[in-house]
Image (cartoon, rainbow, N blue to C red):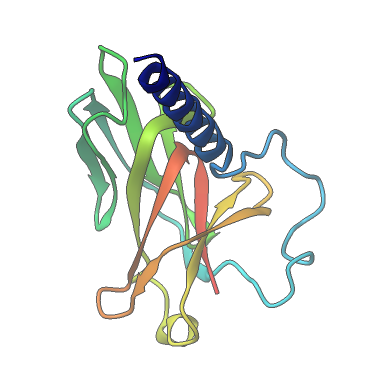
Length: 179
C-alpha cells in the first residue's frame, strides 16, 4: 500500500511540475512601451498602410459564459471560461481613424487585460488596396497603440478571400496587421 501512495505522490509531483512548466511558457508580455520605433528594428516588416478618417467602435458585456463583440467584420470571440469574474466585463473593439490597419481592444477602463483562456480576434482588412494584401501571408502584431511600435508577432491565419486575419491571444491591447 505504501508503494502505491509513493507512486501517486511521485505522479502528483510530476503533474504539478508539468503544469508549472506549461504555465511558464505562455506568451511574453511587454511591461513598458519602448521609445524607438520597431519598424526600423524588424527589417521587412511593416504595418499595412490603409488610411481611413473614420473611427468605428462597438462595446459589449461579456461574462463567464463568453460572447462576441463585433464592429463590422472585425471581432473578438471570447469562449466560456475565459473570464472567471462572476460579473460582466465591458469589452470594446475600436477600429481607429488611422493610416494603418490597426485595432484597439479594451476591457473597461483597464489598459491591459489578461484572459484565463485564449480568445480569438478577427481583423477585417478589406479597406486595404489589393497591392497591400496580395503579397506573402500577413501577420498580426501586438503594438504600442501610441507609437505603432511592433512588440510581438501574434501570427494569425490570413484568409485572402475574406480579406481578414484571425489570431488568438490571452490579452487585450492594440494590434495591427503587418506584412
